[in-house]
Image 1: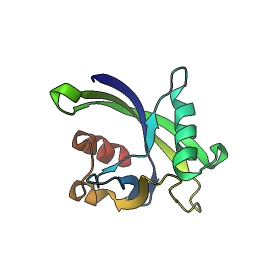
Image 2: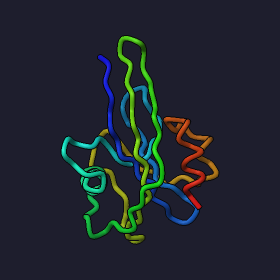
Image 3: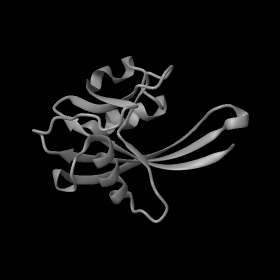
Image 4: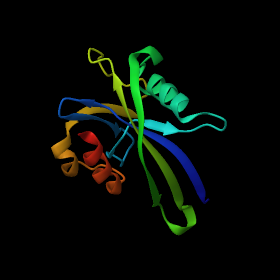
Length: 136
């Protein structure tokens, strides 16, 4: 099945570290930015609030300074199951005293030094330069 997915991704920083999701699914083990699929009729900022609540339990009033930064088109999968993603990339601040804990069993969260991002299995790899540029 071929499909196009509209996704928001959020760059969250603490010092020199970036918050990444890590897949717990069998055979996956890759990292990616927090965020998720935009639902029909939903504004991007509302997707950010909803996804951070679903993934980490973070309330809307604990999120600030949301800024659009870039987008990335990504295609993956085999011909019979090819997928296309349109990733809308934002930065956001969260309260610095929050303990980040996954609310979903299929993911965990890790703070990773931005200088180490090329040493982890981050997907899509073509997003790494966007992360580095928008980290400063």
